[in-house]
Image 1 (tube, rainbow over the protein chains, first blue to last red):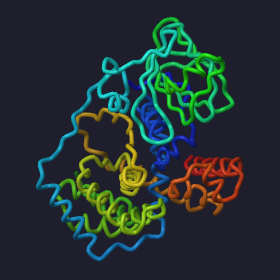
Image 2 (cartoon, rainbow over the protein chains, first blue to last red):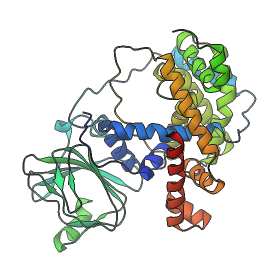
Image 3 (cartoon, one colour):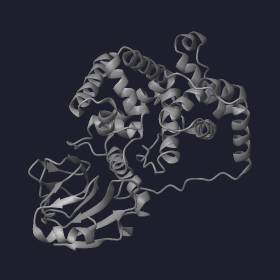
Image 4 (cartoon, rainbow over the protein chains, first blue to last red):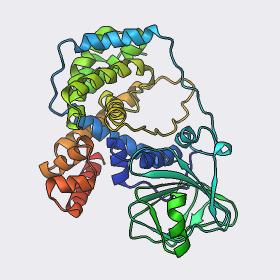
Length: 218
Length: 188
């Protein structure tokens, strides 16, 4: 599933916040999904994790309670007495593994809801201020023109789309902020599947979607 | 696997910690775990306290993190991460789970080759890179280093750092960018 044609990568700010563990869950999901498809950003994340390790190792150490080591060893012994739980491997698929974990399966398990003009979405259950959704955009169709109050991350999982910024293919991630009003249009050749994460509701620029917004939770 | 040469361990203390994790994996070596615990547990606890945990919660989470180090030792690859980096990622995940009450989506793991033993030279090279980065972080100007620390430890977004420090958001972003440029330059 690794793509070597990726042109649009994660920003330093996103990678650092993911490494530090300060992103909302929905953004972490988009970051993890992109890294699943992109070796370059995986390597960059390794560097940010190393910064974290260095800072932790060199910080002023705290004092442990007197029985801390014994308590930890007891915890280890207790866990070893229980039968080991094995993670069931999810196997390959269209969706990157972190997304499959939220869907509870691959593409055929997604519970799509129509949002009009052939576009479908499925909201994924994440906690915190940001929301994550899968978008299904039929070949050649457009997502209604919208702006953002906050940040929107859009990762192409399959197919491609184009907006006024650029062309985005599989593995590409678009980082859009409040300055960008855009109308992503799916390529004509193939239906487009994206993972989108936003930390504020999208702001649609035409009258109808704005009415529909509270109902559709876009 | 051949033991790491004593000379290399002295020159690279990080290799000693990696060797401890490998001994836990190979022989469930409690002495190696105790050594690792004495070094890392107080630092994990400090990291969790600076991230907002009170002392009791930080103590409990630290014990869980160190128990996870034992339980996940088979996943540790010294040619991909130093002991400090690896333990940091476990501590960070515990922080997200316990303090922020969120899940932590992880990237799909790369397919591993046919049970390849990590190469000694790769581990040494990784350790040298890690030390270089450590020196570069230590050499950052205080103002830049402080912001990087806040970003990692303070559980704060750039906007929240701006509110806490009174610095404009643009200044924070450019200081962090400068710090990362310096680190990159040092790693060339």
